[in-house]
Image (cartoon, helix red, strand yellow):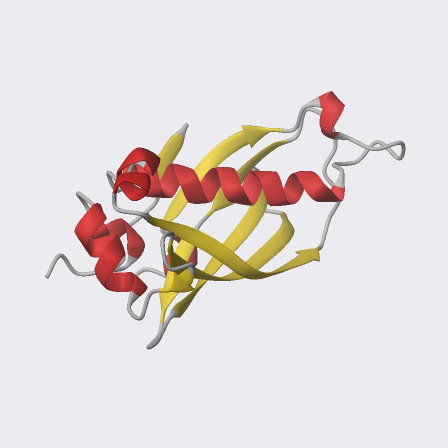
Length: 155
């Protein structure tokens, strides 16, 4: 279940949206904690959930021949997660000038303990030219019903 935790205005964008996830047993490793690759899956799930909450559909991006790409991802593991743990994964876009943007995410247990921090650099790819678009904000605004969840004005 995805939910907006706040609005982009006056709220840290990395905390503006969250999805809840329960760690499943098959996602754990031989030490009994969440496998490192699953953190990336949780982060990706939260990203797509945020886009969906904004009204952005994957099919609309394909129709427009654009798509988000990840250029770099950094994960800081802070506390272990075990099967049955319930977490929320936040997701917020941080905009700058140029072709790229940051996505800041936190994986947090329900008691407030931060288990991991995920930071990614992304862009919006022209699927025909195979090049990053100059202004990804413009593309997201055009695709979104509610760009404010992405920290963007409706312009």
